[in-house]
Length: 379
Length: 101
Image (tube, rainbow over all chains, first blue to last red; front, side, top):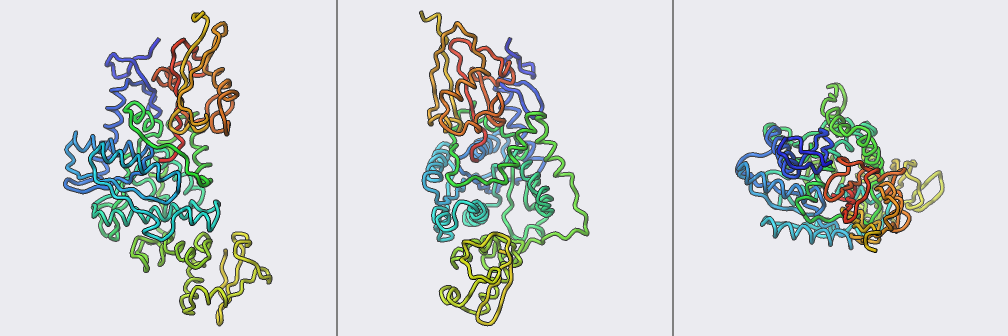
């Protein structure tokens, strides 16, 4: 016997909402889904009339649904926003080139401007080249760090007032779990925010372009169902490089929890929101990278650190501890040695034996000797 | 003759098709002397159609959490899930939610 829609509209239900357990028909589901996003936007005061908002578009399910819903709501509730699309081309042959075609289709369907920025243009490195250098083990670090900054740069180039990303409830719950497991207090306290740097507290934003997450309370299941029933075309190939293993475990754990109790995802987000960090706890202060001028909690941002490592032929430099890396890099700079002379002058001692960079296990103590200085750091 | 066969369609999307030789649509035909449930179909699909990484499709005797199942465009959570009896002409869709974003 078909289940009837809980709203009493008389139609047959087509899905069971994981968040509420309600059975809804297609029309009532669209309405509920869109209205909830609308509430996230209005209650979180994510936008102001007249703003230009860039939607970070990968061609995947989340950003495709985000673009569609943003366009729909902007018209329905007269937000008065100008919406544009922003895509990052990481330079992954057979993956991103295909997904960007999906974004181009969105651009035509929705009539929005599209800007594509590539890692190659921004950093001089494609992910293909980076993986050729460092292998498949830590490449997600590079890709994630570079994408974050590339989006900031793209938003600045497009001169937008805010950047909307397709992070969904599952993503945020995963991040809460990961930050708890890592004891990352600073990230834990800001990862659940629907808006990264409020316009109402400009002194905290440090000139960064605010990031907003309109799909913060939207379950992945509902996003996929929405795309399916709206017949939205999205790209769903796995990245050809190793998936982010750590997030993968958090994700599998979360999906298992959801199966037992679907509200688990909302509960974890709620927990993340409720956790308060004592004033006395040392938190990193957000500042500006001395090299590139973008937001950073360190003097030199992660993207610049990683890039410097790549360009100096020591690609794993930025993956270890930031403080030690900074020390190493400043010593290099102080000695004013060029890349090639530096490599010739240094000897790397690992337990008093000369070894190549690539064979040093992670987290070992490494001594870098230049002509007149020795630097010790954890590799 | 036709009355003794159980014909139905199985579709994969959202990346689930990657595990099935990248084919999105599969026509399935069983002799209808047997009763077929989705639970039984899953095992048959895993043993006969799946081309790689079965652990990404199944976990225990059901689909891996994160794969959505629809029967004639209705969420299987509104039906008998694994015990749903497949009828002639049904369309069963598996959508992965686990790919990219």
